Image 1 (spheres, rainbow over the protein chains, first blue to last red):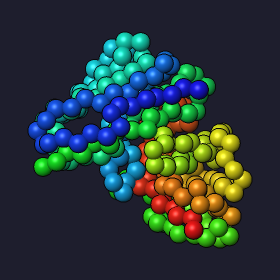
Image 2 (image 1 turned 90 degrees about the horizontal axis):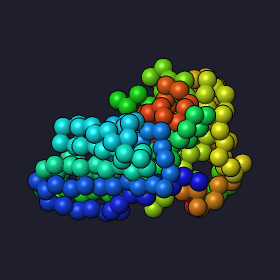
Image 3 (image 1 turned 90 degrees about the vertical axis):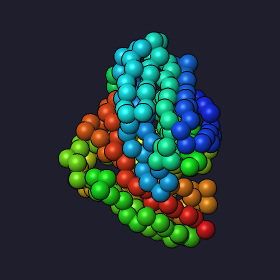
Image 4 (image 1 turned 45 degrees about the vertical axis):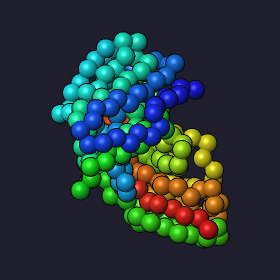
Length: 112
Length: 114
C-alpha cells in the first residue's frame, strides 16, 4: 500500500511570512499532484510534477519533486489570506493504476 | 462554475432512509469518480467509471450503489446508512481514468446520517 505523509498537519502564520509544506513517501510515484481545497468547496488542482528534481512556479508558489520521485514540497512566499485552505498532495502510480494516493493534507491559515 | 456540479450540497438522512446524490460534469471528460472525505483521513476513492463502465470498486459496502447512465452524469444511491457514513462526498471527473489524469472536483455533498 502506498502512503503519503504530509507535514505539518496544521500551520497558522501571519500575512507576509514564508512557509514550506512537505509530502513524503517510501514509494516511488510516476507523478505527483498538488491541490488546494477552500472551505465549502472541492479540491482544485494547482500543479502536476512529473520529472524527478522538477521545480514549477505558480506566482508565489514553488513546487518541487524529489530526485527519487518519492517526495515533494510546496513553498509559499509572502503568504496572503487568500492562500488559506487545505493543501493536498496526491501521487499517481504506475501504468495500469486507476488510483491517486492522497495525503491527509496540511491545513493552512494565513492571518491578516 | 467548477464544471462539475453536485446536488444537493447538504443532506441529512435517517438510517432507514433512501436518498441519492447527483453529479453532472460539463467538461467532456470520459471518467467520473466518487470520493469520501472524512476528518483526519486521506480522500478515499469509492468508485471509478470510465466511459460509463465501472472500472474500480474499492470494497465499498453495498449500502452505497453507484449509477452512471452516461459519461456526463453520475449518481450515488444511499440506503440504510450508518452514522459513520457521515462525511463530505466528492464527485470528480478527468479526461481519462488513468491515475496520472488530473481530477476536477465538484463542491461536494455534506452528508449527515442521524
